[in-house]
Every structure is written in structure tokens, then in C-alpha cells.
Amino acid sequence: MKHAKSLAKIMFVAFLIVFSVAYVPVGAVSFTIKNTYLTLMVDGTVKVVQNIVAENPPVEVSLKLLGEPLIIEVISGEVKVPVEVSDLTVSFTAFERNNTLTYYTADLTEKKGEEWILHYICNQTTHVILPEEALVYSIEPSNFEISLENGKVVLIMPPGEVRISYILIPTTFEKTETSPQPSRTPTPTTYVSPLDYLLYVILALIAIFLMFMVFRRLISSKTSFIELDERDKLIVDVIRRLGEAPAQKIMEETGIPKTPLYRRLKKLEKAGVIESVLRSGKTYYRVKK
Image (tube, rainbow, N blue to C red; front, top):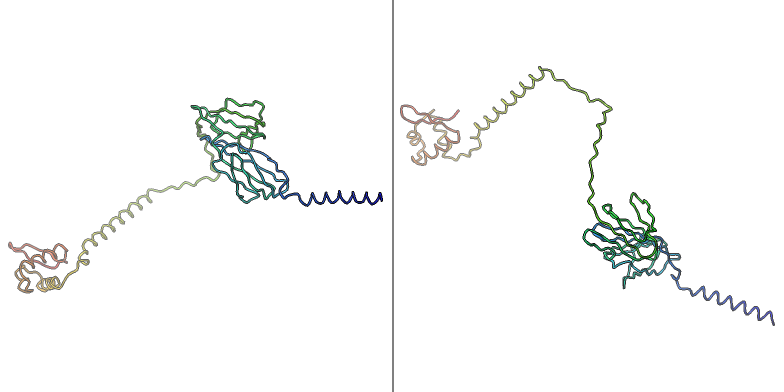
């Protein structure tokens, strides 16, 4: 009988253990904040980055923000997940072990004249990265540490209230002069003899002369671009047949009235098709060679 009661107790305890394990809700395991970084911009905006480790994902995470977020996002593993923000509290589901919460806020800084004041309260250790132009003259509390990460000075502040006062000073960069480095391979020097110079001058003069002749030929041959109608061609044929002739003779041969004839003769002469010569007080026209 005693053995039966003992066996019943053992079975009851085992049942309770199995029941409690079976009904533990998914995501009830806690999470931890690995580190918190605050990077200050020159305009006073603060970028807050918190690396969160979920012990047994998926885990429902709820965190208190340091300030009202302007922009906020959560990366779980390598995937961006939805977030909810209410009363400076962010909530999201961590589907992976490693998660990153990033947000920007302007609530942590205040400017008084040229002085900037960073003020916040955090229950974890924070890493503060100030602008390169910042000149710090007050840090509270005084039990902080300084480290160098990726070439930047980082203030490691203890949990609790933090107040840092600084001003921004313009940075100047001076150009460093370096001595010229000798060339390993000497550059060969080319010498030109006077005879070569003379040859270059002659070639240049020949080129100029040829360009002048081509230009002159283009000017003289512009008549090929003049479009002649039947009457113009008739006038040219008559003048060519007669060798040279006055306007009266051309008018008799072509039958073109005086006024239109003079207008056409003037056009042909201007175009360079014919030319006029004055002989014994009378104008004769001939085809231009």
C-alpha cells in the first residue's frame, strides 16, 4: 500500500513537470541588451544603437526609449521587422538571436548659446561618441572610461544619469608639404637640331600656302553652288558664243527685256559667272574664266 502511494506521488510530480514544460509559452525567455551606443551629430541629433540578444527566439521585446524617436528600425538577424512605439516604449518580436535597434532622437541634447548639453538617464552602460568638432569641458559623473574604437574616441559612461557639456569648434586642415620624390626611371631628354627647326618652319609655310590656295579655290568656285534658271543659262550661252557683248546685243539675242536683263546680268556678275569690262565708255560682258 505504501509503495502504491509513493508511486502515485511520483507520477503526480512527473505530470506537473511535463505539464508545466509543455505549456510554457513561446518567447517567454528573457532578452539582454548587449551594448548601447550614442552617436552625436553636429546638429544635436543623437543616433542610438542597441544590440539586443534573445536567449531563445522568437522573443517579444519591449524596451524603454531614451527619447522620442524621429526614425526607428529593428533588424532581427538580417531582416527588418515591424515595430510599435507607444509612450517612449518600443515593442517588437525578435526572431533571431542577434537584433539591432536603431533610432534617432533630438530629445537628449539642448543648446544654450554656443554650449551643447547632452543629458539622459539609462540603466545600462552607454558608449558615447561625440562629434569630431566637439570640445568637452564638463562630464558627469566623473567615473567614466575612455576607449578608442575605429579611430574614434568613445566615452564609456556608467548606468544612471549622464550630463556632458561641450562646444563645437571649426576644424582646420593644414596642407602638409612633402619633399619631391626622385623618379626611379630618368626621363629621356629630346634635343632638336637647328636643321630640324628649319624643316618644321618650311613645312608650316607649305601647309599655310596650301590652305590659302584651297580657300581661294573655294571662293572662286562658289558659282557651282549658284542655281541658274533657263534665262540665266541662255544669257551665259549668248555671251560665251559672242565672246563678249554689250547689254543691248545680249537683249537682242535673248529677247529678254532691258530691266530684267540688267537684273540678271548683275546677279551673274555678283555670283562670279560673268565679268564686265569698260571699253570706249561702253560696258561689255564676258564669261569669267
